[in-house]
Picture 1 (tube, each protein chain N blue to C red):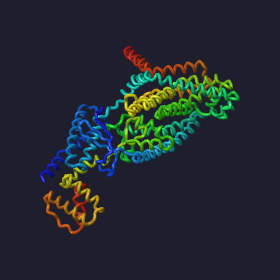
Picture 2: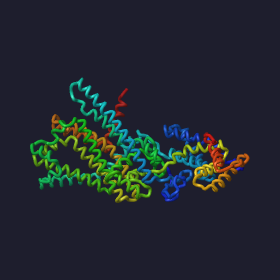
Picture 3: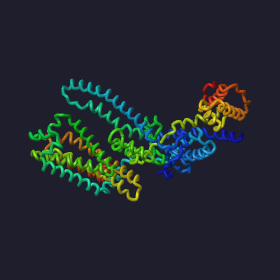
Amino acid sequence: MPADRGLRAWLDSRVPRWQAHRRLLRRLRRHGGHDPRDVRRTIEAYRSVARDLSLARRLMPGSEVTRGLEDLYLGLHDVVHTRAFRPRDTVARLYLRDVPALFRAMHRDLAAVALLLAASAGAGWLLVHSFPDLAPLFASRSMIEDLQRGHLWTRDMLNVMPPSLISLQIMSNNMIVTLTSFVLGALYGLGTVYIVGTNGLMLGTAMAVTARYGLAGQLAGFILAHGVVELGMIILAGAAGVRVGRALVHPGELPRSEAFRRAAEDGLKLAAVWLPALAGSGLIEGFVSPNPAYPLPARAVLGLSWAFLVWTALTGDLWRLAARYTARLRRSSP
Amino acid sequence: MCNACVTGARQPAQTGRRNQSVEELSVSTATGLEMNLTIAGVGGRSYAFVIDWHIRVLVALLWMIVFTPLASGGIAAMEQRLGAATLAGLPIYVGVVPAVLIYLLYHPVLETGMHGHTPGKRIAGVRIVTPEGLTPTPGALLVRNVFRLIDMLPLFYALGLIVAAVTDRHVRIGDMAAGTLLIYVDEGAAASLDRSAVRIGATGLDPGQMELLDALLRRWRQLDAGRRMELGGRLLETICRARGEPVPEVRNLRDLRRRLRGIQRAGSGKDAR
């Protein structure tokens, strides 16, 4: 049977090549391919396997050989077309270009979410101020009893837990709240509105309850060092969530799925700033805010400096300044 | 970037994995070849998740069980020496925090490191890919995992499961956000290429005969005696003629099967009894 003999001869000649291609693929998957020779070899292998697969599909449809070739071809297709991941370049692009551009583009969303937070805080304040009996709905009985005795609940924080644990608890809680606020934007933005609204309501009621017992100043002093950035990041995450929701409601010229995917990706880029910022605020809230040794001016300076640093990180100025400073240092060094 | 044209189509699977109608992702590649990838449904997805969940919970618990008492013991010894309770939080940092990190970072880290796989996905035979059939970027995998926060609502991934059950490509919200989907991977395909090449070389059969022989022996018990004798006898005759050997006298069905198995096993290095 000459046809069968021809097929066997073809297989005998091709199998060693396929095995070599498989070895190349395994090596590229494990270590990546930085050698130009590897790139050439991969492209050649991709074309060669494509030809062989095409033939195998015609001569041996559904056979083990065809299945194996399809798998090899898919692997090579993946290696050839997947963009190389360079962590250093990705991080530099993220902080220097993507985040500042996004931050500039979303000023309306930021303003809207800030307004929502302020309005819900105002509503919370008004509610408790007008109906003081509602205070137990927002604050626990023990907290109110402490306030009645003239004690702010934050005063005993350091007696209950070491500052590092307080920081850890606060930062993880804040990170979860902001990520949830962003992700719930997928419910057409309503989830984000709910999270931002309830946070504002809690803030407003807490201020109103403490003001009722003449302790609002102390609470403001407690919040001063960490609160500016913390609230700012809640607003930023909320704005990212609102963008996700808007992408679903008004996708514009893009397909809805693509608009949603892009908004989600953009939100995660912003999380690269808000998550470290919340970690920093958590440290301040654990170590500085509950500690009476830090006077009000020191807290104000720390809070504003931290907020300025985060702001410049969002606008990209921080990294540009750092790069300029490093370049100057390099020039001045012998 | 891949310039592949991608279409989702409901058509019968070509891979032989399933006989019933399954959904496939059709990927047109740069060389003009079209590849059909079988989309994993809720079952494959859940199976992989349950395995991964058990692995990460067990590893995290094991870490906590081993390292928390170790850290506590170390602190007690240090406190005796230092005479002060200054290291109260250490067991949490050594025991609990890494365990929580293992639990939370299991999926993003392994999916990135294993090119869209996790141990659970590997066992379930599924893999995360882009609609172009490529490995997703680390950013996309991170988005996919952050959106678990919504998929897991209100309990036990109910929302994610419902969405995966009703969407065309069986994707959860996280997959939509990341632009990914889960496909079945033919795990045996890589080995089958080498195996079949070796067997074809050793048995002298052409690939068509090899496939036919495998299929007949696999379905041997499902066929009635007459069909077995007819198909098996014809195949044995064809193979012997192709190899230039005399056609042996077959005494009974058992003898026929033994001879066919002998030919099949000649290439796998197993005993031909």
